[in-house]
Length: 196
Ligand SMILES: [Ca+2]
Ligand SMILES: [Ca+2]
Ligand SMILES: [Ca+2]
Image (cartoon, rainbow, N blue to C red; front, side, top):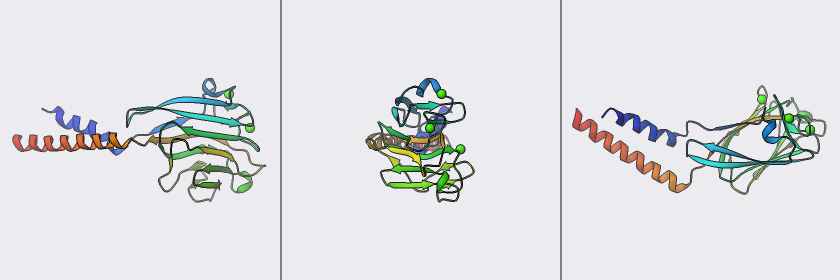
């Protein structure tokens, strides 16, 4: 009965949310280019959920290149907007940009359901070395909500690299997984008790 602990780990791992979905926008010309709106199929193995991300551009076509993702050219510039939404509730871990500078004239603006903020080196929740926006509190994007990415100033020019997120499990699924885990724990304990 050696397989029992292995089964336990396999069942317990999804509850811990150890992995997440990383969406790399770079080097994906075949997926995004020559369109202002693209729906991309994604899969979160933690909760065995397939879902769709919709990416829309204002001001030109979406344009993925080897190192950058922008609108019209490789960059997000004045008057251009990237809108991102999902058909499931997700928790956003980070958005990775490039080309962001040290002040508001060279920053990125993120419009969320919670408000509008400008990010550049030195701003809280923004890593200026990696140009990474990483919310310090849990940040969810629910079905029907969207993120808008813009530049923080007409002179700014930035680009999108990647994003990490997790699907927020349906409450029913969470409960079922929890019940399953408790069941396995109980059985495992009994197994140890009877085999000691
Ligand atoms: Ca391209
Ligand atoms: Ca552009
Ligand atoms: Ca970066």
